[in-house]
Image (cartoon, rainbow over all chains, first blue to last red; front, side, top):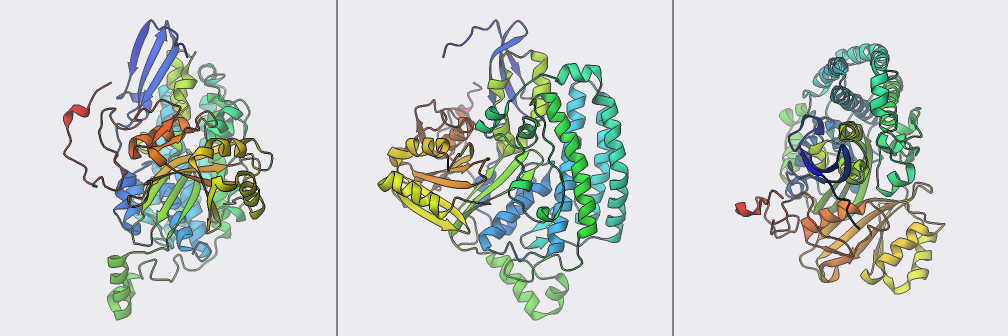
Length: 393
Length: 161
Protein backbone atom coordinates (compact mmCIF):
# COMPACT_ATOMS: atom_id res chain seq x y z
CA UNK A 1 0.00 0.00 0.00
CA UNK A 2 1.27 3.45 -0.92
CA UNK A 3 1.94 5.55 2.16
CA UNK A 4 0.86 9.12 2.03
CA UNK A 5 3.78 11.48 2.35
CA UNK A 6 4.13 13.36 5.59
CA UNK A 7 5.52 16.80 6.30
CA UNK A 8 6.59 16.08 9.82
CA UNK A 9 7.23 13.04 11.94
CA UNK A 10 6.31 13.62 15.55
CA UNK A 11 7.43 11.35 18.33
CA UNK A 12 4.89 11.22 21.15
CA UNK A 13 5.95 9.49 24.32
CA UNK A 14 7.03 7.10 25.74
CA UNK A 15 7.04 9.46 28.70
CA UNK A 16 3.96 11.51 28.05
CA UNK A 17 1.39 12.41 30.69
CA UNK A 18 -1.57 11.49 28.54
CA UNK A 19 -0.52 8.06 27.35
CA UNK A 20 -1.46 6.36 30.64
CA UNK A 21 1.96 4.85 31.07
CA UNK A 22 4.71 4.29 28.59
CA UNK A 23 3.17 4.15 25.17
CA UNK A 24 5.15 5.63 22.31
CA UNK A 25 3.43 6.85 19.19
CA UNK A 26 5.20 7.88 16.02
CA UNK A 27 2.85 10.24 14.24
CA UNK A 28 3.37 11.23 10.63
CA UNK A 29 1.74 14.58 10.18
CA UNK A 30 0.58 16.63 7.29
CA UNK A 31 -0.17 19.96 8.84
CA UNK A 32 -2.19 19.06 11.91
CA UNK A 33 -3.61 15.88 10.37
CA UNK A 34 -2.21 12.44 10.99
CA UNK A 35 -1.57 10.52 7.80
CA UNK A 36 0.18 7.52 9.32
CA UNK A 37 1.09 6.37 12.76
CA UNK A 38 2.76 3.54 14.57
CA UNK A 39 2.44 2.46 18.18
CA UNK A 40 5.54 1.15 19.91
CA UNK A 41 4.99 -0.74 23.13
CA UNK A 42 6.90 -3.06 25.40
CA UNK A 43 8.57 -0.56 27.72
CA UNK A 44 7.26 -2.25 30.85
CA UNK A 45 7.42 -5.84 29.64
CA UNK A 46 8.14 -7.94 32.71
CA UNK A 47 7.66 -11.43 31.35
CA UNK A 48 4.75 -12.27 33.60
CA UNK A 49 3.77 -15.31 31.52
CA UNK A 50 7.27 -16.75 31.76
CA UNK A 51 7.36 -16.03 35.49
CA UNK A 52 4.07 -17.86 35.97
CA UNK A 53 5.51 -21.03 34.42
CA UNK A 54 8.05 -21.15 37.22
CA UNK A 55 5.73 -20.63 40.15
CA UNK A 56 3.22 -22.77 41.95
CA UNK A 57 -0.40 -21.92 41.37
CA UNK A 58 -0.80 -20.19 44.72
CA UNK A 59 2.34 -18.13 44.24
CA UNK A 60 1.15 -16.74 40.91
CA UNK A 61 -1.75 -14.79 42.42
CA UNK A 62 0.25 -11.83 43.78
CA UNK A 63 2.04 -11.52 40.44
CA UNK A 64 -1.22 -11.02 38.62
CA UNK A 65 -2.21 -8.27 41.01
CA UNK A 66 0.47 -6.28 39.31
CA UNK A 67 -0.45 -6.95 35.71
CA UNK A 68 -3.34 -4.52 35.59
CA UNK A 69 -2.34 -2.55 38.65
CA UNK A 70 -5.49 -0.49 39.05
CA UNK A 71 -7.89 -3.41 39.00
CA UNK A 72 -6.16 -6.12 40.96
CA UNK A 73 -9.30 -7.95 42.03
CA UNK A 74 -10.60 -8.75 38.57
CA UNK A 75 -7.16 -9.98 37.56
CA UNK A 76 -7.06 -12.35 40.48
CA UNK A 77 -10.63 -13.42 39.92
CA UNK A 78 -9.98 -14.44 36.32
CA UNK A 79 -6.99 -16.52 37.29
CA UNK A 80 -8.74 -18.11 40.25
CA UNK A 81 -11.70 -19.07 38.07
CA UNK A 82 -9.40 -20.62 35.48
CA UNK A 83 -7.61 -22.74 38.08
CA UNK A 84 -10.89 -23.80 39.66
CA UNK A 85 -12.16 -24.84 36.26
CA UNK A 86 -8.97 -26.81 35.73
CA UNK A 87 -9.46 -28.54 39.07
CA UNK A 88 -13.14 -29.10 38.34
CA UNK A 89 -14.32 -27.50 41.59
CA UNK A 90 -16.09 -24.45 40.21
CA UNK A 91 -19.46 -25.67 41.47
CA UNK A 92 -18.23 -26.37 44.99
CA UNK A 93 -17.28 -22.81 45.89
CA UNK A 94 -19.51 -21.55 48.75
CA UNK A 95 -22.16 -19.10 47.68
CA UNK A 96 -21.07 -16.41 50.08
CA UNK A 97 -17.63 -16.42 48.53
CA UNK A 98 -19.15 -16.03 45.09
CA UNK A 99 -21.08 -12.97 46.20
CA UNK A 100 -18.04 -11.49 47.91
CA UNK A 101 -16.09 -11.96 44.71
CA UNK A 102 -18.74 -10.09 42.77
CA UNK A 103 -18.72 -7.26 45.30
CA UNK A 104 -14.96 -6.91 45.08
CA UNK A 105 -14.96 -7.14 41.29
CA UNK A 106 -17.60 -4.44 40.98
CA UNK A 107 -15.86 -2.15 43.47
CA UNK A 108 -12.75 -2.60 41.38
CA UNK A 109 -14.67 -1.69 38.26
CA UNK A 110 -15.88 1.52 39.89
CA UNK A 111 -12.42 2.44 41.12
CA UNK A 112 -10.85 1.70 37.75
CA UNK A 113 -13.49 3.73 35.92
CA UNK A 114 -12.94 6.58 38.37
CA UNK A 115 -9.25 6.66 37.53
CA UNK A 116 -10.16 6.61 33.87
CA UNK A 117 -12.70 9.39 34.31
CA UNK A 118 -10.33 11.55 36.30
CA UNK A 119 -7.37 11.23 33.99
CA UNK A 120 -9.41 11.37 30.80
CA UNK A 121 -11.11 14.57 31.89
CA UNK A 122 -7.82 16.00 33.13
CA UNK A 123 -6.23 15.43 29.75
CA UNK A 124 -9.07 17.21 28.05
CA UNK A 125 -8.78 20.14 30.43
CA UNK A 126 -11.31 19.49 33.18
CA UNK A 127 -9.18 19.59 36.29
CA UNK A 128 -11.89 19.43 38.92
CA UNK A 129 -13.28 16.07 37.79
CA UNK A 130 -9.93 14.53 38.52
CA UNK A 131 -9.98 15.73 42.11
CA UNK A 132 -13.58 14.61 42.67
CA UNK A 133 -12.99 11.18 41.12
CA UNK A 134 -9.96 10.50 43.24
CA UNK A 135 -11.82 11.59 46.36
CA UNK A 136 -14.37 8.81 45.82
CA UNK A 137 -11.74 6.31 44.75
CA UNK A 138 -10.03 6.86 48.08
CA UNK A 139 -13.17 5.58 49.82
CA UNK A 140 -13.02 2.38 47.78
CA UNK A 141 -9.37 1.96 48.65
CA UNK A 142 -10.33 2.26 52.32
CA UNK A 143 -12.95 -0.44 51.83
CA UNK A 144 -10.33 -2.72 50.26
CA UNK A 145 -8.01 -2.05 53.14
CA UNK A 146 -10.70 -2.93 55.63
CA UNK A 147 -11.55 -6.30 54.10
CA UNK A 148 -8.31 -7.44 52.49
CA UNK A 149 -5.54 -5.50 54.17
CA UNK A 150 -4.10 -4.14 50.94
CA UNK A 151 -5.25 -1.10 49.05
CA UNK A 152 -4.01 -1.46 45.49
CA UNK A 153 -2.80 -5.04 45.47
CA UNK A 154 -5.41 -6.63 47.61
CA UNK A 155 -4.60 -10.33 47.29
CA UNK A 156 -8.13 -11.10 48.35
CA UNK A 157 -9.12 -13.96 46.04
CA UNK A 158 -8.07 -17.50 46.81
CA UNK A 159 -8.24 -20.62 44.74
CA UNK A 160 -11.29 -22.14 46.41
CA UNK A 161 -12.86 -19.03 47.91
CA UNK A 162 -11.82 -15.67 49.24
CA UNK A 163 -9.33 -14.73 51.94
CA UNK A 164 -11.62 -13.38 54.64
CA UNK A 165 -15.23 -12.84 55.50
CA UNK A 166 -16.62 -9.33 55.77
CA UNK A 167 -16.50 -7.36 58.97
CA UNK A 168 -19.35 -5.30 60.34
CA UNK A 169 -17.38 -2.15 59.71
CA UNK A 170 -16.89 -3.12 56.08
CA UNK A 171 -20.57 -3.68 55.46
CA UNK A 172 -21.52 -0.43 57.18
CA UNK A 173 -18.97 1.56 55.24
CA UNK A 174 -19.93 -0.13 52.00
CA UNK A 175 -23.59 0.71 52.56
CA UNK A 176 -22.61 4.28 53.27
CA UNK A 177 -20.59 4.42 50.08
CA UNK A 178 -23.40 2.97 47.98
CA UNK A 179 -25.79 5.55 49.34
CA UNK A 180 -23.47 8.43 48.61
CA UNK A 181 -21.95 7.39 45.32
CA UNK A 182 -24.91 7.72 42.87
CA UNK A 183 -25.12 11.41 43.80
CA UNK A 184 -21.45 11.77 43.03
CA UNK A 185 -21.94 10.29 39.57
CA UNK A 186 -24.59 12.95 39.02
CA UNK A 187 -22.01 15.53 40.07
CA UNK A 188 -19.49 14.31 37.51
CA UNK A 189 -22.16 14.32 34.86
CA UNK A 190 -23.15 17.91 35.56
CA UNK A 191 -19.52 18.82 34.98
CA UNK A 192 -19.14 16.94 31.71
CA UNK A 193 -22.16 15.43 29.99
CA UNK A 194 -23.57 18.66 28.58
CA UNK A 195 -20.39 20.69 28.78
CA UNK A 196 -19.87 22.33 25.40
CA UNK A 197 -16.09 21.95 25.40
CA UNK A 198 -16.35 18.32 26.43
CA UNK A 199 -18.86 17.62 23.68
CA UNK A 200 -16.76 19.22 20.99
CA UNK A 201 -13.69 17.30 22.09
CA UNK A 202 -15.45 13.94 22.25
CA UNK A 203 -18.47 13.79 19.93
CA UNK A 204 -17.77 12.22 16.56
CA UNK A 205 -14.11 11.64 17.45
CA UNK A 206 -12.43 8.26 17.09
CA UNK A 207 -15.40 6.37 15.74
CA UNK A 208 -15.16 2.57 15.78
CA UNK A 209 -18.19 0.86 14.30
CA UNK A 210 -19.54 -2.47 15.43
CA UNK A 211 -18.15 -4.68 12.64
CA UNK A 212 -14.69 -3.16 12.91
CA UNK A 213 -14.69 -3.53 16.66
CA UNK A 214 -15.65 -7.20 16.52
CA UNK A 215 -13.16 -7.89 13.76
CA UNK A 216 -10.38 -6.36 15.84
CA UNK A 217 -11.41 -8.43 18.86
CA UNK A 218 -12.27 -5.34 20.87
CA UNK A 219 -14.28 -5.99 24.02
CA UNK A 220 -15.54 -4.11 27.04
CA UNK A 221 -16.93 -0.56 27.08
CA UNK A 222 -15.46 0.21 23.65
CA UNK A 223 -17.42 -2.59 22.01
CA UNK A 224 -20.57 -1.69 23.92
CA UNK A 225 -20.27 1.93 22.83
CA UNK A 226 -20.21 0.63 19.27
CA UNK A 227 -23.56 -1.13 19.56
CA UNK A 228 -22.83 -4.71 20.59
CA UNK A 229 -24.17 -5.98 23.89
CA UNK A 230 -21.32 -8.40 24.47
CA UNK A 231 -20.50 -8.63 28.15
CA UNK A 232 -18.93 -11.72 29.68
CA UNK A 233 -21.11 -11.25 32.76
CA UNK A 234 -24.24 -11.70 30.64
CA UNK A 235 -23.01 -14.08 27.93
CA UNK A 236 -21.13 -16.52 30.12
CA UNK A 237 -22.13 -15.72 33.72
CA UNK A 238 -19.57 -16.61 36.35
CA UNK A 239 -19.64 -16.38 40.16
CA UNK A 240 -23.03 -15.00 41.20
CA UNK A 241 -23.84 -12.85 38.18
CA UNK A 242 -26.65 -15.14 37.03
CA UNK A 243 -28.51 -14.44 40.29
CA UNK A 244 -28.30 -10.68 39.91
CA UNK A 245 -30.32 -8.34 37.75
CA UNK A 246 -28.49 -5.60 35.94
CA UNK A 247 -28.48 -3.89 32.58
CA UNK A 248 -25.67 -3.71 30.08
CA UNK A 249 -25.49 -0.16 28.73
CA UNK A 250 -25.20 -0.11 24.94
CA UNK A 251 -24.78 2.96 22.75
CA UNK A 252 -24.67 3.20 19.00
CA UNK A 253 -22.18 5.77 17.79
CA UNK A 254 -18.92 4.25 18.92
CA UNK A 255 -17.21 7.60 19.45
CA UNK A 256 -15.30 8.91 22.43
CA UNK A 257 -18.45 10.44 23.91
CA UNK A 258 -20.36 7.16 23.83
CA UNK A 259 -17.51 5.34 25.49
CA UNK A 260 -17.70 7.95 28.22
CA UNK A 261 -21.45 7.40 28.60
CA UNK A 262 -21.07 3.60 28.69
CA UNK A 263 -18.54 3.80 31.50
CA UNK A 264 -20.63 6.27 33.50
CA UNK A 265 -23.65 4.00 33.19
CA UNK A 266 -21.56 0.99 34.11
CA UNK A 267 -20.65 2.61 37.40
CA UNK A 268 -24.34 3.03 38.20
CA UNK A 269 -24.97 -0.60 37.31
CA UNK A 270 -22.09 -1.67 39.54
CA UNK A 271 -23.70 0.11 42.47
CA UNK A 272 -26.93 -1.74 41.69
CA UNK A 273 -25.10 -5.07 41.55
CA UNK A 274 -23.36 -4.53 44.88
CA UNK A 275 -26.63 -3.51 46.56
CA UNK A 276 -28.28 -6.72 45.38
CA UNK A 277 -25.27 -8.75 46.50
CA UNK A 278 -25.51 -7.36 50.01
CA UNK A 279 -29.19 -8.29 50.13
CA UNK A 280 -28.90 -11.75 48.61
CA UNK A 281 -25.63 -12.86 50.16
CA UNK A 282 -26.25 -15.89 52.38
CA UNK A 283 -24.38 -16.54 55.59
CA UNK A 284 -21.86 -19.34 55.64
CA UNK A 285 -18.26 -20.28 54.91
CA UNK A 286 -16.18 -18.33 52.41
CA UNK A 287 -13.73 -21.09 51.49
CA UNK A 288 -14.10 -24.70 50.44
CA UNK A 289 -13.04 -27.35 52.90
CA UNK A 290 -10.75 -29.31 50.60
CA UNK A 291 -7.29 -28.72 52.05
CA UNK A 292 -5.53 -29.95 48.93
CA UNK A 293 -6.67 -26.70 47.34
CA UNK A 294 -6.78 -24.11 50.08
CA UNK A 295 -4.77 -23.66 53.28
CA UNK A 296 -6.57 -24.74 56.47
CA UNK A 297 -7.59 -22.00 58.94
CA UNK A 298 -4.77 -20.69 61.10
CA UNK A 299 -6.34 -21.93 64.38
CA UNK A 300 -6.17 -25.47 63.08
CA UNK A 301 -2.62 -25.08 61.84
CA UNK A 302 -1.40 -23.83 65.20
CA UNK A 303 -3.44 -26.11 67.42
CA UNK A 304 -3.84 -29.45 65.66
CA UNK A 305 -1.41 -31.91 64.13
CA UNK A 306 -3.63 -32.60 61.12
CA UNK A 307 -3.93 -28.93 60.31
CA UNK A 308 -0.19 -28.45 60.49
CA UNK A 309 0.49 -31.40 58.21
CA UNK A 310 -2.12 -30.24 55.71
CA UNK A 311 -0.64 -26.76 55.74
CA UNK A 312 2.88 -28.03 55.07
CA UNK A 313 1.70 -30.48 52.41
CA UNK A 314 0.01 -27.74 50.48
CA UNK A 315 2.78 -25.21 50.87
CA UNK A 316 5.47 -27.66 49.79
CA UNK A 317 3.69 -29.59 47.04
CA UNK A 318 1.22 -26.97 45.91
CA UNK A 319 -1.99 -27.56 44.04
CA UNK A 320 -1.73 -30.26 41.40
CA UNK A 321 -4.49 -30.09 38.80
CA UNK A 322 -4.94 -32.88 36.25
CA UNK A 323 -3.33 -32.50 32.80
CA UNK A 324 -5.49 -30.49 30.45
CA UNK A 325 -6.18 -26.99 29.32
CA UNK A 326 -8.85 -24.45 30.07
CA UNK A 327 -9.79 -20.91 29.12
CA UNK A 328 -11.72 -18.80 31.60
CA UNK A 329 -12.68 -15.18 31.21
CA UNK A 330 -14.08 -12.40 33.32
CA UNK A 331 -15.38 -8.98 32.38
CA UNK A 332 -12.65 -6.68 33.60
CA UNK A 333 -13.06 -2.91 33.61
CA UNK A 334 -11.32 -2.81 30.23
CA UNK A 335 -12.92 -5.77 28.54
CA UNK A 336 -12.65 -9.51 28.43
CA UNK A 337 -9.79 -10.65 30.58
CA UNK A 338 -9.05 -14.26 29.79
CA UNK A 339 -6.69 -16.84 31.20
CA UNK A 340 -5.61 -19.84 29.18
CA UNK A 341 -3.83 -22.44 31.28
CA UNK A 342 -2.13 -25.58 30.02
CA UNK A 343 -1.42 -28.01 32.82
CA UNK A 344 0.84 -31.04 32.57
CA UNK A 345 -0.22 -32.46 35.92
CA UNK A 346 2.51 -30.84 38.01
CA UNK A 347 2.14 -28.06 40.56
CA UNK A 348 3.17 -25.35 38.11
CA UNK A 349 1.33 -24.36 34.95
CA UNK A 350 3.02 -25.61 31.78
CA UNK A 351 1.88 -22.52 29.93
CA UNK A 352 -0.17 -19.62 31.08
CA UNK A 353 -1.48 -17.02 28.71
CA UNK A 354 -3.25 -13.85 29.77
CA UNK A 355 -5.61 -12.44 27.19
CA UNK A 356 -5.00 -8.78 27.93
CA UNK A 357 -7.97 -6.60 26.97
CA UNK A 358 -5.83 -3.46 26.83
CA UNK A 359 -3.40 -4.89 24.30
CA UNK A 360 -6.10 -6.10 21.98
CA UNK A 361 -8.13 -2.91 22.37
CA UNK A 362 -5.31 -0.56 21.42
CA UNK A 363 -4.07 -2.63 18.48
CA UNK A 364 -6.48 -0.59 16.37
CA UNK A 365 -4.75 2.69 17.32
CA UNK A 366 -2.56 3.13 14.20
CA UNK A 367 -5.58 2.63 11.98
CA UNK A 368 -7.92 4.67 14.14
CA UNK A 369 -5.67 7.72 14.41
CA UNK A 370 -5.54 8.20 10.64
CA UNK A 371 -7.15 11.46 9.47
CA UNK A 372 -7.56 12.75 12.99
CA UNK A 373 -6.01 15.93 14.34
CA UNK A 374 -3.11 15.76 16.78
CA UNK A 375 -5.29 17.13 19.56
CA UNK A 376 -7.72 14.22 19.12
CA UNK A 377 -4.97 11.68 19.79
CA UNK A 378 -5.19 12.53 23.47
CA UNK A 379 -8.91 12.07 23.67
CA UNK A 380 -8.82 8.84 21.65
CA UNK A 381 -6.13 7.20 23.77
CA UNK A 382 -7.95 8.29 26.90
CA UNK A 383 -11.21 6.81 25.70
CA UNK A 384 -9.63 3.45 24.85
CA UNK A 385 -8.40 3.38 28.46
CA UNK A 386 -5.31 1.23 27.98
CA UNK A 387 -3.23 0.29 30.96
CA UNK A 388 0.35 -0.15 29.89
CA UNK A 389 1.17 -2.62 32.65
CA UNK A 390 -1.39 -4.91 31.13
CA UNK A 391 -0.46 -4.17 27.51
CA UNK A 392 3.16 -5.15 28.06
CA UNK A 393 2.75 -7.62 30.89
CA UNK B 1 -18.51 -20.97 28.59
CA UNK B 2 -20.44 -22.68 25.82
CA UNK B 3 -18.48 -24.59 23.21
CA UNK B 4 -19.63 -26.09 19.92
CA UNK B 5 -21.60 -29.31 20.18
CA UNK B 6 -21.18 -32.83 18.84
CA UNK B 7 -23.21 -32.07 15.73
CA UNK B 8 -21.00 -29.24 14.61
CA UNK B 9 -17.82 -31.19 15.36
CA UNK B 10 -19.05 -33.97 13.10
CA UNK B 11 -19.86 -31.43 10.43
CA UNK B 12 -16.27 -30.22 10.54
CA UNK B 13 -14.94 -33.78 10.44
CA UNK B 14 -17.04 -34.52 7.37
CA UNK B 15 -16.11 -31.36 5.59
CA UNK B 16 -12.38 -31.47 6.23
CA UNK B 17 -11.75 -35.20 6.69
CA UNK B 18 -8.06 -35.88 7.16
CA UNK B 19 -7.24 -32.24 7.88
CA UNK B 20 -8.95 -32.50 11.27
CA UNK B 21 -6.16 -34.28 13.10
CA UNK B 22 -7.55 -34.45 16.60
CA UNK B 23 -10.56 -33.42 18.65
CA UNK B 24 -10.13 -33.03 22.41
CA UNK B 25 -12.75 -32.27 25.02
CA UNK B 26 -11.75 -31.29 28.54
CA UNK B 27 -14.05 -29.64 31.10
CA UNK B 28 -16.52 -28.97 28.34
CA UNK B 29 -14.02 -27.13 26.17
CA UNK B 30 -13.47 -28.34 22.62
CA UNK B 31 -10.10 -28.08 20.90
CA UNK B 32 -9.64 -29.14 17.29
CA UNK B 33 -6.21 -29.68 15.81
CA UNK B 34 -6.07 -28.80 12.14
CA UNK B 35 -3.32 -29.47 9.64
CA UNK B 36 -1.27 -26.48 8.58
CA UNK B 37 -2.16 -26.82 4.90
CA UNK B 38 -5.89 -26.52 5.51
CA UNK B 39 -5.78 -23.97 8.34
CA UNK B 40 -6.66 -20.95 6.26
CA UNK B 41 -9.57 -22.67 4.54
CA UNK B 42 -10.77 -24.04 7.87
CA UNK B 43 -10.74 -20.60 9.49
CA UNK B 44 -12.54 -18.98 6.58
CA UNK B 45 -15.17 -21.70 6.76
CA UNK B 46 -15.66 -21.13 10.49
CA UNK B 47 -16.14 -17.43 9.95
CA UNK B 48 -18.46 -17.59 6.97
CA UNK B 49 -20.53 -20.73 7.55
CA UNK B 50 -24.07 -20.14 8.81
CA UNK B 51 -23.92 -22.67 11.63
CA UNK B 52 -20.59 -21.40 13.01
CA UNK B 53 -20.40 -17.63 12.40
CA UNK B 54 -17.16 -17.25 14.35
CA UNK B 55 -16.94 -13.49 14.00
CA UNK B 56 -14.49 -12.88 16.82
CA UNK B 57 -10.96 -14.12 17.19
CA UNK B 58 -10.45 -13.81 20.92
CA UNK B 59 -6.77 -14.58 21.15
CA UNK B 60 -3.79 -16.22 19.50
CA UNK B 61 -1.11 -17.85 21.55
CA UNK B 62 1.29 -20.77 21.35
CA UNK B 63 2.66 -23.57 23.49
CA UNK B 64 6.18 -24.94 23.23
CA UNK B 65 6.76 -28.70 23.62
CA UNK B 66 10.52 -29.17 23.09
CA UNK B 67 10.25 -32.97 22.91
CA UNK B 68 7.64 -32.98 20.17
CA UNK B 69 8.07 -32.53 16.45
CA UNK B 70 7.15 -29.84 15.48
CA UNK B 71 7.76 -28.30 18.86
CA UNK B 72 5.37 -25.36 18.71
CA UNK B 73 1.59 -25.48 18.56
CA UNK B 74 -0.24 -22.28 17.73
CA UNK B 75 -3.60 -21.85 19.43
CA UNK B 76 -6.56 -19.80 18.26
CA UNK B 77 -9.47 -19.05 20.56
CA UNK B 78 -12.59 -18.35 18.51
CA UNK B 79 -16.05 -17.12 19.37
CA UNK B 80 -19.32 -16.36 17.71
CA UNK B 81 -21.05 -13.39 19.30
CA UNK B 82 -24.30 -14.23 17.53
CA UNK B 83 -24.48 -17.90 18.46
CA UNK B 84 -22.49 -17.47 21.67
CA UNK B 85 -20.38 -20.57 21.15
CA UNK B 86 -16.62 -20.97 21.36
CA UNK B 87 -13.99 -23.17 19.80
CA UNK B 88 -10.27 -23.60 20.22
CA UNK B 89 -8.30 -24.38 17.09
CA UNK B 90 -4.77 -25.69 17.26
CA UNK B 91 -2.24 -25.88 14.50
CA UNK B 92 1.18 -27.51 14.68
CA UNK B 93 3.81 -25.21 13.26
CA UNK B 94 5.66 -27.50 10.85
CA UNK B 95 8.82 -25.77 9.66
CA UNK B 96 8.25 -23.15 12.36
CA UNK B 97 5.61 -21.31 10.41
CA UNK B 98 1.86 -21.15 9.98
CA UNK B 99 -0.28 -19.15 7.56
CA UNK B 100 -1.46 -15.79 8.85
CA UNK B 101 -5.12 -15.17 9.59
CA UNK B 102 -4.80 -11.40 9.73
CA UNK B 103 -6.87 -11.04 6.56
CA UNK B 104 -9.73 -12.90 8.25
CA UNK B 105 -9.62 -11.31 11.71
CA UNK B 106 -7.73 -8.14 12.48
CA UNK B 107 -7.14 -9.28 16.07
CA UNK B 108 -4.25 -11.25 14.64
CA UNK B 109 -2.43 -8.02 13.76
CA UNK B 110 -0.70 -7.69 17.13
CA UNK B 111 -1.26 -11.11 18.67
CA UNK B 112 0.55 -12.84 15.80
CA UNK B 113 3.42 -10.43 16.22
CA UNK B 114 3.60 -11.37 19.88
CA UNK B 115 3.64 -15.08 19.13
CA UNK B 116 6.38 -14.48 16.58
CA UNK B 117 8.65 -12.67 19.01
CA UNK B 118 8.00 -14.99 21.94
CA UNK B 119 8.14 -18.35 20.14
CA UNK B 120 9.85 -17.65 16.83
CA UNK B 121 6.92 -18.90 14.76
CA UNK B 122 6.79 -17.13 11.41
CA UNK B 123 3.43 -16.17 9.96
CA UNK B 124 3.38 -16.62 6.22
CA UNK B 125 1.91 -13.85 4.18
CA UNK B 126 2.56 -10.91 6.49
CA UNK B 127 5.38 -8.81 7.84
CA UNK B 128 6.90 -10.45 10.92
CA UNK B 129 7.89 -7.64 13.24
CA UNK B 130 8.44 -7.87 16.98
CA UNK B 131 5.89 -6.22 19.19
CA UNK B 132 7.13 -5.93 22.76
CA UNK B 133 10.83 -6.74 22.48
CA UNK B 134 13.61 -4.77 20.74
CA UNK B 135 13.73 -5.65 17.04
CA UNK B 136 17.27 -7.03 17.27
CA UNK B 137 16.66 -9.24 20.30
CA UNK B 138 18.07 -12.64 19.32
CA UNK B 139 16.15 -15.02 21.61
CA UNK B 140 12.59 -16.30 21.90
CA UNK B 141 11.79 -15.89 25.60
CA UNK B 142 8.71 -18.06 26.02
CA UNK B 143 10.39 -21.15 24.62
CA UNK B 144 11.12 -23.72 27.28
CA UNK B 145 14.90 -23.62 26.77
CA UNK B 146 15.07 -19.91 27.60
CA UNK B 147 16.02 -19.59 31.29
CA UNK B 148 13.78 -17.62 33.63
CA UNK B 149 16.54 -15.19 34.57
CA UNK B 150 17.39 -14.65 30.90
CA UNK B 151 20.77 -14.54 29.23
CA UNK B 152 23.49 -11.98 29.86
CA UNK B 153 22.01 -9.00 28.13
CA UNK B 154 23.93 -7.72 25.14
CA UNK B 155 23.41 -3.98 24.99
CA UNK B 156 23.46 -3.78 21.19
CA UNK B 157 19.89 -5.07 21.06
CA UNK B 158 18.64 -1.60 21.84
CA UNK B 159 18.10 -0.14 18.44
CA UNK B 160 15.92 2.77 19.55
CA UNK B 161 14.26 2.37 16.18
